Length: 314
Ligand code: BDR
Ligand code: CA
Figure 1 (cartoon, rainbow, N blue to C red):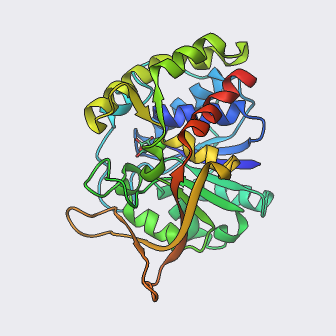
Figure 2 (figure 1 turned 90 degrees about the vertical axis):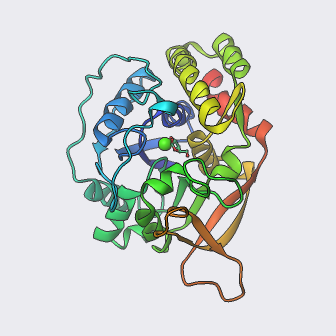
């Protein structure tokens, strides 16, 4: 599977990238970064460091949008991801260079190069993707499908009563993407909050991982300490944390992990309490909008086994 990632590399984005790098099923052909958990320049630096950690091949990484389409960015999500986005673990600065290309051009070039094959996986706010669609509306039909981490239908929000962080950061972008006609599956809090990673899982992985994944697992164990703590403070998780971004990557490769439902969807772009809420319409004549498939159920045990397996199989 040829994969184009769009990320805001924080701790769980890092985990998701490492999973994909170590899983042979995924061929990462490009990565763009967006402002979300951290600034897009820091997300780019973090991404290069993660590629180093996994001894990944040369993958082009472009630095994308540094602010949402409208409104202002709220700043780094330090409680969850640490001040540097990587749980305050200082990895060596990478010697890899960023790829210099306009993000929309980069996206479209890859979509044309791998027309009908490219799977777009987004792990952050959708600013870059919305901009690409604005410049190249046909992008929506050139990619095979898009899997996004974001949103919630039935679970409570994580940054507002009804909003999930990636969408609340840039609701206008997500709404535009929903309307684009792209084949989209949203893997949101309805499933990610149900898959809980415990310290014991990671201790086990530290003992059993393959030598090639050793440095990556050591890093994850350190970075997750901050992530566990942050999730305890913000999400009432005691002794475990939700698996957000990796689950979107896993869905792209193993859709049978989840049950999805297609619904007509828009994103609330106004309001004080509901900005960033995903609104789906189950009426016979729903509001005009895009048909989006939402992951609503997951097999948590199977998902956790799948999450860890590349780290010992590689
Ligand atoms: C999403 O927000 C970010 O903090 C995570 O990286 C994930 O993409 C979860 O709501
Ligand atoms: Ca993310």
